[in-house]
Structure formats: C-alpha cells, structure tokens
Amino acid sequence: KNSIAAFLAQILFCCIAHSLHLRLGDLNSLLAAVSIHIFAWLTQVLIGHGILEGNAPAMATNLTINSVMLSVLLAWDSY
Image (tube, rainbow, N blue to C red):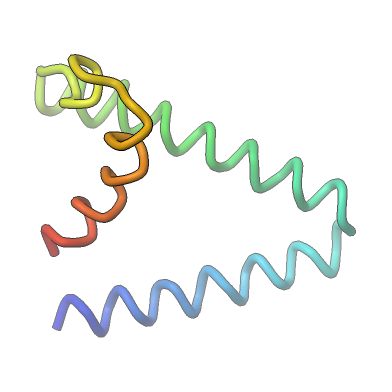
C-alpha cells in the first residue's frame, strides 16, 4: 500500500518537474529545483527534528559522505 503511494508520488513529482522545466527553461528550473531542495532539507531539520521530535538528526553527530549518501536509502527502507 505504501509502495503504491510512493510510486504515484514519484510519477506526480516527475510530471511537475517536467512542467516546470518547460515553463521556466534550463537555468531557472535548475535554480527552482535547488531552492526547493534546500527548503525541504531545512524544513526537515528545523521543524521535523527540532520542533516535533526534539532531538538532533543522527547525521549531526557523525557527518560523513557515507551518512549523507545512505540517509536517503535508510529513509526509503523505513517505509
């Protein structure tokens, strides 16, 4: 059930990204994507970890390239 919802969300995100690319062009769509990505990370860290959970993210104590690369896989594995 969750995997179907995740699949449909990915299709929706792809359609939105393609639409933004067609409307904004190459450089502006790249800037929009980077801005959204930074906003999402800040929201996750500040609101998700800071306010709702009340603890620091695990990567804050041991920040390495491996932890950054594997954090996405671990998040997807938890579903």
